Image (cartoon, rainbow, N blue to C red; front, side, top):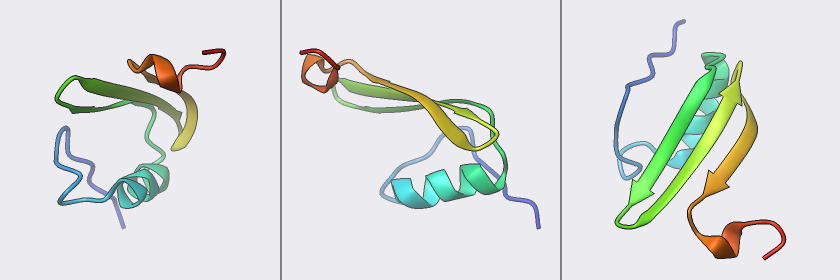
Length: 64
């Protein structure tokens, strides 16, 4: 069964854990960007596995 991943959506409709599971099942490689107001987060996945994450919040950076 093929998992269809939309190019955009709302986490209110598809919770983040479910999105990650669907991306894993689809072996998705690429970037997932989440944003709300002035907060942005980006996750890079390789074949469904997160390999990098970043946030524009300084409090979420290592070493701060």
